[in-house]
Amino acid sequence: MIIKILGTGCPKCKKLEENARTAVAELGIEASFEKVTDLDKIMDYGVMMTPGLVIDEKVVASGKLLTAVEIKSFIQKGV
Image (cartoon, rainbow, N blue to C red; front, side, top):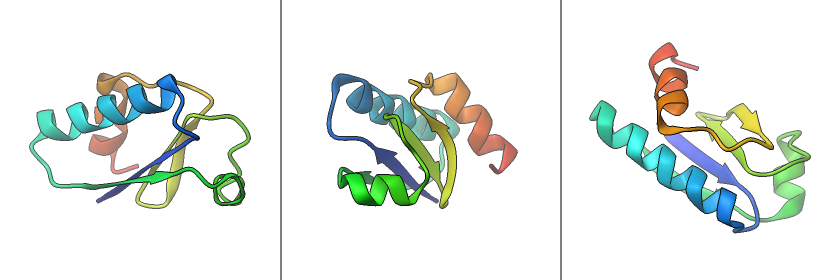
């Protein structure tokens, strides 16, 4: 599983990454994390507001800080 955090490094972006790492740890699964900070690449995903969360190349949220519980739900549903 590849999880990407889309954003320029703002506090919400950092918290989203922290929540995603917590969700993965609580589920006991393996995932790699990538930070996408280039605005052109972020816009390639159709994300106009950060932070954004991409799981296995599917955008699951943008402009919203998801909780670890919400992220776990997306992962468990198989996105």
